[in-house]
Length: 307
Image (cartoon, rainbow, N blue to C red; front, top):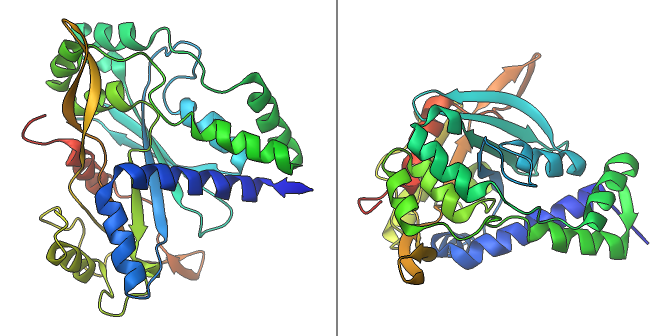
């Protein structure tokens, strides 16, 4: 019995969604409300954050994610630059347009102050590679043949899922706080590593009659008690409108003066997107890209008054 690359990819995305739901109560509540109203939960895209610097045995920057998803039929579509934030990004798409797009960004560590570079490099320089040799071989086979024996496919999904976490040692509390002063993105990656940064509801496919668009959805979520971003990114009727819940906080492990301790820090928000129609090659379709200015504002959703 064989499983296809598409089935393996779908199984991994489902597992990542479950892991994310376990941590992000606002996404769980969105799912409960939408399903309760007879609607559908469809995700538009998933975001990941990385460091573009030497990360031990793990590929650096965007390659940390790309080398896996390229074996799962995802291909790069467009590049983005966020000069002020010292970030570059690529968005990837699957041949099946209903699979979520993947938005992978990287912090250009060399552009930070020297002291911040050293903190990051010292923390991540001995990072182990979280995939087994067997999984590396299975990924190569999957990319070449497009399928695997079912048992092997199930094992691969399980191993891939555990890759999406912090791969390096617990960072020092003082290091996180210092780095946060110059880049809250850097502090987040020190704490959360390869973990999903956020999922995004695809409002176009939500199918809730009383929430026909992004604005009504955000209003409904706020009325249900979910803390929401105060403004919408993009104009109504434009090719892309986005908003988000606020980010949930977690008790994260850090190294203090007396050993391992915990402190509160942001993990993830749940984003929402509504896409407009555009003409491409004479054909009308939903816009599938991203708009730099909107994305730049949404990067800040993991910032709070406390961090």
